[in-house]
Amino acid sequence: MRTNSSFALLIFMVILAVGAGLTYAGYVHWGALPSAAIGVAAFILAIIVSNSIQVADQWDRAIILRLGDFHSLKGPGLFFIIPIVDAIPYWIDIRVITTGFKAEKTLTKDTVPVDVDAVLFWKVIDPKRAALDVADYQSAISWASQTALRDVIGKTMLSDMLEGRDKISSMLQKVIDERTEPWGINVISVEVKDVLIPSALEDAMSMQAQAERERQARVILGDSERQVAEKFAEAAKSYQNNPVAFHLRAMNMLYEGLKENATIVIVPSTAVESMQLGGLAGLTALTMGLGQEQAKAKATSPSSRLPKALINESNGHAVDTASGA
Image (tube, rainbow, N blue to C red):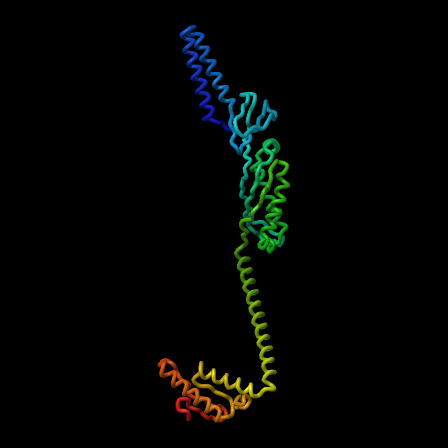
């Protein structure tokens, strides 16, 4: 039973002080025997009154039983009971309460053992039923939550459990609320904190996810190659009936290659003929122009490197870009 020791002690001391004063006054006027009776009466009255006064906090409700039968529900604030006749077996907290619960090594629908941790948010909405219809409502809620969690896990696939925690939380809230509603308890929400799976299965799932990402990367790469091939085909159609544009494009590609990257470029004679580069004379003129530009660049930037030679693979000729010979 909860007691209000401070307030009850204050009332007890006040009544006892008044009784002591009356005892002294009776001793002066009536003698020792009447004063003793006044003192005993004041002491008994102080005990009765201090035990009759009760104070309930704003969030507490007191269950009053009179001679074993439910009498009333008191609180919050100040109220009185009859000592010996009335009793307060329960103080019910009507605030929102959190209860943690878990299910260990529970098999899912696809027979995978998992450990699940969850938190239950609930409150008492009918203190009378919570006190009279169940022996220990807090323990009952904890056990009801654990059994409900095991039931929901057994009906759920592992993939759904890992991806849809909100759905599992809603299912748990509905099941637990149905079980605790006759006890005057309302389930506000259920939150699944963590789902633990065996380490071997976790490694296998990681490998599966990695393989899936690699497959997607290869698919994207293949699609990119297809798009590039389509664009090259469109470009070939554009150059097919325009040899001048094709010739200029070939010269530009060769110029960029010599200018940016290579010091030696091997050009097959078939490529020279197909790109209509004009044979050795055209190549010589091209490399002479490059040599002049790179000589100017070398004067301003000593770290730059000049192309050395352009070799026609089929004819075996080499052109020195520095001298232009």
